[in-house]
Image (cartoon, rainbow, N blue to C red; front, side, top):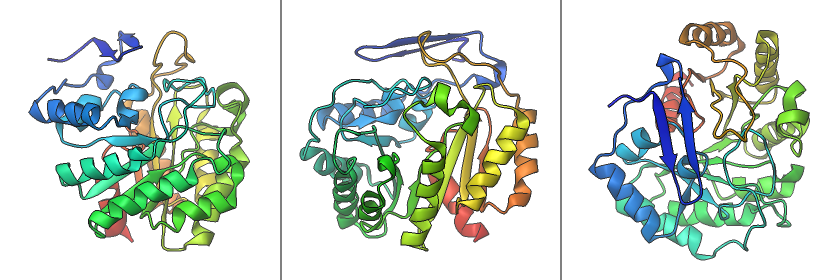
Length: 303
């Protein structure tokens, strides 16, 4: 069943996206694996960015036995205008959360795990130790499991970043999200230069770690701004880049200014291919964690 009206229903949110361009339509896949993933998440009280951020790829990923784990609770302390993750006063990090994620990884037999979090500006280390503990517990199951972490900026703390990296994730992802001109409007509590510095610092702390970042298009950026942002990422040690279409989660979020066509995404990919990225994932439904394992494989093949 293809959809013209997409509905994602959670406990507190209903989203309806109408009249999307045809290239943004997906086939819904509520199969047995989808139901299994949903059941395990509920059993172990685990959050996912797939659900919390209302990702359009959720049925595809759950249906194929994958999910991006969201740690440090479900409430974010920032107010980015594009993001559907709930805002509010978060609870202290649950000591059971890393344990339960490790249990779910073991049950599903995952060989590639993506772990992200809400931003926790209320915590002295931004949640870095919680990240580190989760990574170590998953790695203790099998040292060959590949772990990608998609981290917040930790308010620029090098010590917090070092704590995460010393737990030995394989890929360090931090999304730049948009072009610098739009930060004050889209991400008022974030800082473009701070995010770039985090990417550079990760490589300085551990040269072998793979550094990754991504942006969304359709927020009002120009073509030149996209290209210049990609140059900035390359100059700050980014090796894998993801570029996808922004979709407005609810009517209360920032409106879409433009739907880029697949041809326009291809043009952008061709233009930045000369910059020397080891892998470029560029397309309307691209998300930083979508097909993350395939991105990693491509990186290895191109390195």
